[in-house]
Image (cartoon, rainbow, N blue to C red):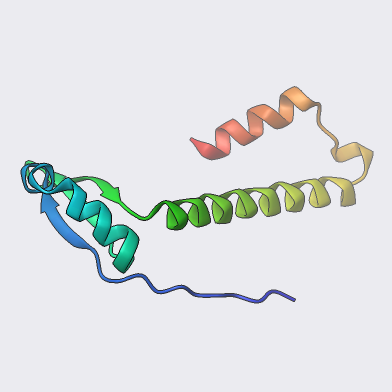
Length: 101
C-alpha cells in the first residue's frame, strides 16, 4: 500500500536574471521563509529556479526513491522471467543508458 503526501508550494515568481541579481538576498529569503520558488529567465527563456534547500533535498530524495523503485521493479521482472531472461551487468547498464536517452 502506498500513501501519497502532497506538499503545496506557493506559486513561483518569475524574474529576469537582472532583477534577481539586484536583490538576490530577497529571492533566497523568499524561497526559505515563504517557500516561494523564483524562476529565473534570461532573454525571456526560463533558465533556473531558486528553491529552499530543504525543498531541494526533499525533491532529490523523491527522485532517488522513484529511481530505486523503478530498478527494483526491473529486477523483479527479470527474476520472474528466470535465468533465460538474465542479462550481464554490462548489458543492464546499456539498457538503463538507452532508457535514459
